[in-house]
Image (cartoon, rainbow, N blue to C red; front, side, top):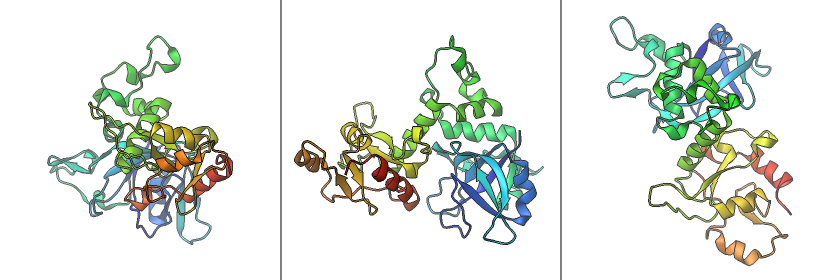
Length: 299
C-alpha cells in the first residue's frame, strides 16, 4: 500500500477539482505514480485563512499527461472514492503533528513538509483518516457482527487501533460515508435548513436538518459537500420528489405540480434563495443543480 498527501487550496493556480483530478508538474510525477491505485489525503496549507488542515481522502485511479498544458500531469480520482472528512484534522495540534513522517532525527519538521506531493506512511495514513472519520462511535456503522458481509475489522477493534487496511475498508463503507457526508454538509450550512432558514436543535444538541444529496448516490452523485444541501425533513422530502428545485443562481423554484403552492412558498426563507455556505467551494456546484432541475424537478 502506497499512500500520499496532496496539498490543495481553493485559490490554487492549478486546475484542481479534488473529487475528480489533481494537477501537478513533472517534478512530482514519480511520487504520484507510486500512489496509483491507492489513497491520498488532501491537505489545505496552514497559511490559508481558517485552514481545514487534512480535509479529504480519495483514491488515485490513473495518471495522465495534461492535454492542455505541456509538462503538467493529472492524477485522476476514481469515481465514488472521494470523501470529505466529517472532522477536518489540523496539521499541528498541542505542540505535535499527526504526520510523523515529516519529522527529522531531531524531532523537528523537515523540509519535506514544503512538498506539494509527498509519501505518507501507513501509520500516518491510519492516524489521519481515523481522526477525519471521527473519534466517537457514531463514526462507525452499527452492525451485526454475525453478518459476514458487514463483519469488517473496524467493528471488532477499538477505533484507535485500526490499521491502514482497516481504514480503507471504512472508506468504502456506505454507512461511514453517509455519516461523514452528513457532518460535512451540516457544518458547511451551520446546521440550518438552506430552504426554510430554520436552525432547530434538540435537547441533546442534535440538529433537526438532514444532509441531502443534490444528485443522488444511486445516480452517480458524489459524496462531496458541493453535491449536498442541509434541509429539514419536509424540505428534503419535497426536494427529492422534485416539488422544489434550484435555478442557476440558487433561487428556489416551486413546481407547478405542487398541490398547495401557497403553503410551500410560506415555508421558504424570505430571500427566496438558497442560504448557501460561506465558503464558495462548499456551495452547490452548477452541474449538480442542473442535473436535479433536468432530472428531478417537476416543471
